[in-house]
Length: 317
Image (cartoon, rainbow, N blue to C red):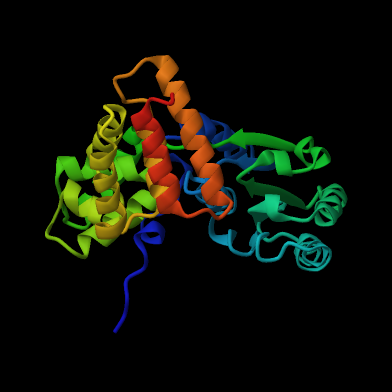
């Protein structure tokens, strides 16, 4: 039995102009393709926003049929020590490019490289700059040492807009003959939070369960609560009815199987949709931040969420 490729790979854009939601970045990258010349690049942004896709598409357009011979991808979170720079990267960098003037080394999650490895990489970038270009991808550019940042053209990839997510999801739905309802599309955009990979995975997971992709199916598959449920729980707590808000919390955790971290994140998101004053929103966010910190430290999620709802009910805001 042959399994189909994950849709995140099956529908990964092959050309720069196929990438959605990154018009200003694509325009700059296309200029490198036209000139057949480029500096070292640094792509910074959260996961699933197109950094790897842009790097691969750029290599394909610069090198054409020889892109595999001239492109090396290394995940720095797996190989983060100085040895990977001294051996694997240097061995590839010193070889002659095929059908082009330079090679491209793509270092994914480069912010995971140790300090020694980054300093070795800085020297490698200097020595082999005539035959090799580096594309560094990271979640946090602040973790990349300044000497490397100064050698790179920096591209900031923010979370994708809901419109960009919807364009891609509609395209895939059409290709796969999926009955995607409008509320299902809105739900996928909501749970993706600007992450295209998460959105496509949600679509593929939902398509394997139901004939029609609806809002309820998406939230069921992604183990997320409806925004209305979270908002209602907070409204009930703010009204002073702690017991009722606690029952809603129990339903979310015990019956729907949501984690405390998921609920905290959704409460934070829905805070700005509450019909309360700006000052109250600030106080609520402050309490949510305190609860999130305690969860990260290992506190019991149910107790911390109950404590948060109790404070909301008591008016400690």
